[in-house]
Image (cartoon, rainbow, N blue to C red; front, side):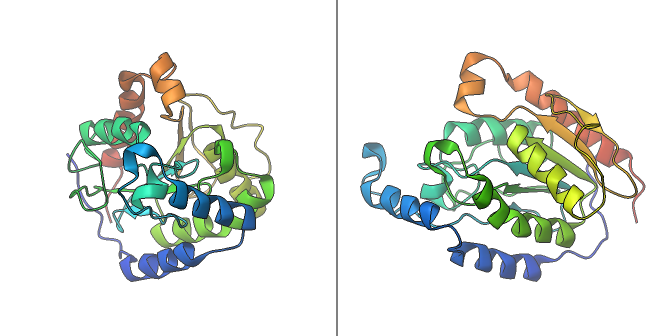
Length: 241
């Protein structure tokens, strides 16, 4: 059964952080790319106004699970302004999160569609859609403090990394803070699960729900649901404050 924790929820602080993220212009290459995409658009969305800015985190401010993706899609979250919304990856992700009890509905099409997360918060390694979906190391470094602040505010009990970049971004953050010494003991693999030192969250990994992975069968709905269900069981078994 899903239960809520009594920890204080940093809703106002997350909202303030998200305002900072939206206003960020640290990476000129990405800023120009977002502006170009928002101006040129995709033909299917030519009548829509693109978000065209960094995309903030989205979810439950009391979340025990933080989900780390790669980056907003150029014509997905960069268009709609909400993580994993408006593209096939989001359709896959939210359907399976709903099955596992982490969302109130299985669909995600636009920011006002009524979707709400339950006990989960979705963020990304980088907040701007990068050309070719390949952020530069300096761009990932520029974004790292936003993820770090989200984790400090939410204090999750589980982290789910979607894909190797999100996974290694999180581990690099822990190394920088001196909470682990190396990534070597924590190899990325779909379905991997690690108990980290001290009171760090349990770390789970999944292949990223990109179209390349889902259309080729590298990541199937059952594969992802199995990981999400395992996280749900882990969280439900924890003692509550």
